[in-house]
Length: 355
Image 1: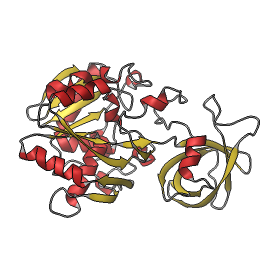
Image 2: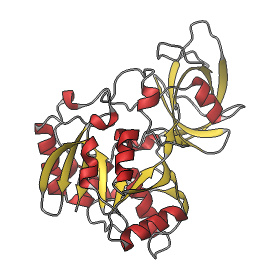
Image 3: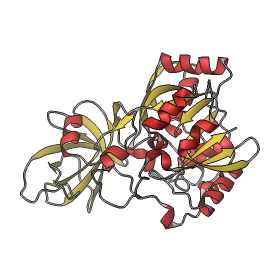
Image 4: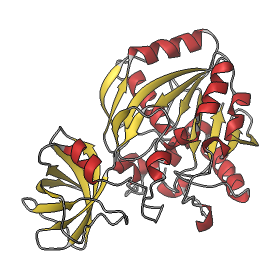
């Protein structure tokens, strides 16, 4: 299989730069992969498509303010994007600058201002970061006290994806975060969950739809393009996840009662499928790293339905949903979504795939 098998043409105006005013007011395309039927709803109609004892599995990771700005010791400006934490003082990061910084050099990190640039003209509050080493696209960086998380909270910006080509605004601090986010560590939002609001959660609960939460800290590597033509040669970035016994019990109860396990987002899919393959005996508790790569031919073990946003052409997420529903069905669903002017990517509309 080639990357070109998962490409499509997307009009620029369909890339959502802002979320809908109300989370659950976004549109929802239902693809029934059992027969190829496509129907159109709004996200607040989701309870019509679910029933007891279906189980929604959410990723409760919390996005940290992972984009920071500073200067190299030579004076050149640099943009920093956290990828993942190594420990309290160290992190893997990506740099954007006119010239790549070198191992052993320092970055002067400036406190954020109100204009979205992150650079204070008066030189105000700042800290110094030390570049330890470089490994392919990522740098290992040492943060001073009080550590990576505290410095990110003080100096960082909302890490909007690169296709949202604007500076972050105050509203993004709330809207680029799910309402159930509780465990800090992600540098990109699990965007399928952005459509859920309190009213919708209440309706789903009244309908008897159950819920469970796991954690996968989404890394900046999720935006890295596939750089090989043969997708089987692609290596996924590593992300940290936790799937607890409570999730395993909830999935077991759901299945025993004839319900469907509905993954909210591709990160929930990757978490459940990782935890289903580690022990070789079905879904089991797991805490650790995953680099699972799901593409057509994969046999799903723990997911019956999937709620997801519309993804970038040629991305590993296109490959995952194609594995779930079939490549030709996904191509047709995306053709219809474009024809019907659905909004794409992180702040865009959603689809639910059943099969």
